Each structure stands twice: as C-alpha cells, then as structure tokens.
Amino acid sequence: MTTPRILTEFRDLIVSGLEGALAGTSLLHPVLRYHVGLEDETGARRENLGKLLRPSLVLFTATELGADPRRALPAAVGIELIHNFSLIHDDIQDGDRLRRGRPTVWSLHGIAQGINAGDLMAAIAIREALSAGPQITAALVSATIEMIEGQGLDLSFETREATVDEYMEMIDKKTGALIRGSFTLGGLVAGAEAETLRRLSELGTALGRAFQIRDDILGIWGNGEVTGKPLGSDIRRRKKSLPVVVGLSRAGGADRTILVETYQKEGLTDADVTAVVTVLERLGAKEIAERMVKEHLGRAEEILAALPFPHKEKMTELIDYLARREK
Image (tube, rainbow, N blue to C red):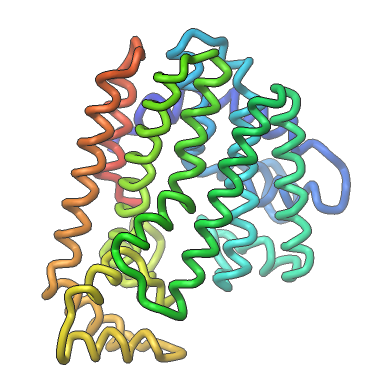
C-alpha cells in the first residue's frame, strides 16, 4: 500500500524539529527520545517514529494556505509531543507493555517515572507552541484539554455500557481533538479566515472519526502479521471499541449474555475471544463499523472540495489510505 505524500514530504523536517525539541540532557530526555522513536533503549540513534500524521497535517495545511512550512514547525512539533504525552500516560492506564513492538516507557522505567516523562513531554510541547505565539499556544491547549476529557470518557466505559452516540462523543475528543487541532494550527499559522478555519475543523472531525473507527476494526479483525497484534487483541483487553458498543446495543438473549459475561471476566481465553468475535459478526457489527468509516471519509471529501487547497489530490490520497490501512 503506497504511503500518501502528506506523510512523506514533511517527514525530515518534522524529525529535525523533534530532535531539536528533545535535545536536553536531563535524566528524562533520553526517555522521551526513546518513546517518540528517535533512539533505542541504549540511547543509540534509531528511527521508529510511526506515521507522524498530526504534524504532517499541520505542515500540509499551512503550506496549502500559503505559509512557509518552517513557520508552522513549532506548532507541528508541539502537537506531536502532546500526542506522545498522551500515549505515555495511556500505556500506564491500560497496562500496555508494548508500543510499536518496543517496551513502553513505564515498563522500562516504572510507573512513577513514566508519569514524570509524560508530564515533561507535555511541558516541552507547550514551550514549542509558545515560540509560535499565544494564538497557537491557546489552540494547542484547547485541543489537549479535549483530548484528556475524551480519555476520561473512554476509561469510564470500562465500568459501564456506552451508547453509540456517547462513543462518538468520546472519539471526537480523544482522537478527533488532535487531528482537528492539526488542521486548525496549520490554518492559524497561515492566517486563514474564520470560514476556512471552520471547514478545517469539520475536516478534522470527519477524519478523526474515520481514523478511530478503522483502528477499532483492526483491533478486532486486523491481520496479526501486519498489525503485530493477535486476532481480537482489543477484546482480550476488554476494550469497548465501536464494534463492541454496536454489538451491545443490538444484542439480546444468549448473544447479550456472552458479551456481558465475557467482559466481566478478569482474564480471557482464546475461546472467549472467539465467542465474542462470532457474536459481533452475527450482529453485523463489523459491517456497521465499516459503513461508518466510509460515511465519514465521504464527508471529509465533501468538506475538502470547499477548501482553498491547490493540491487537493494529496489529501484525497490520505483519505484513501485511511480507508484501506491495515495497521
């Protein structure tokens, strides 16, 4: 699957910006460089940075609206560091020991230092944004607040059932806030008018929904050789992702009993995971989730058509990539 140009053309600039932002020599700075993927556990240079979606969107948007991408770099680095701060803390909250095939920060350094590392990452992100001005900083802080609120909602679903509407509200914050914020930051750097900023925010909401729902599908039905996770990995973690929320909303009788009782267990067997996957497929949860991805990506294409981007085909490539990505 070809990587869209948006995720490649600014990569070197983003990496350079991250190196500069995380160049400190304190006890925790090497931990941060390890987490974002600039170094390995020994401090040796290694690049394992993931897609860099959010900073790429900042730089693409700013460039399309007429700004020099270097002017937008502090904003791009800031939002990538906020994203990584959230991942460090998410791994602690979820008890995850691996991220992108490597040990997580807390599993290497302990929970207390993991919390410190995440806090430092967030502080450095704000410092980067401040160098771009108060308007950029305010927008980044607003997106961060929404993202944290979304994480709180997500955790609350572990102890209660959520409706589909509640789930969409959660991902609009937890996932959508930083994607929406990426477009907004790029627009602000370029001095975009209010109507353009509104459309950029709507585009971010649509892409954020599609991105997270696709992620939810992969978390249950993804190819383990590609995702690096076993079939039904989100079920093993008793995560109430969209297919499970849909399943619970549609299930009755024996199907509902299987879903509810399985998600109340402490540890799940392969047979438990298989039983849940079978119920979700019988209830059409996968097809509903896939249809929702298409709907939100279709909405993104409608919004894109109204934006003053001279290279809309690059965003169309990204939309197609998000629809078909396997990891």
